[in-house]
Length: 96
Image 1 (cartoon, rainbow, N blue to C red):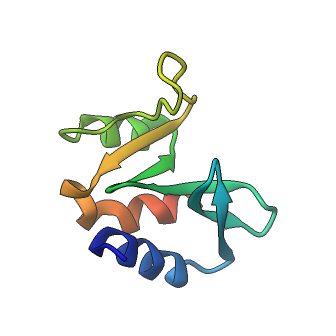
Image 2: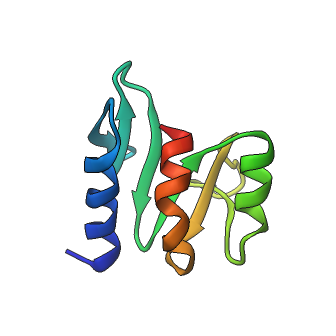
């Protein structure tokens, strides 16, 4: 297990009212209603964000709209690389 994946599990276990699951074959954090708000992929995390939170996330170096298939970014989903892992917990709290 990578350091980034360990951090994902730590963050997931600390979020009240959520549980771990899978989305598109990737680890994710789901709310009690079953909707995912956070995904883990390779060495980064993907967060469902909107408004100022999304703008801020996208201002981080290396962050981008999540585009799993190339050419069709997922609306509201922002990939944040591990260079900003200190902020993952805060984004996860917002996205849950």
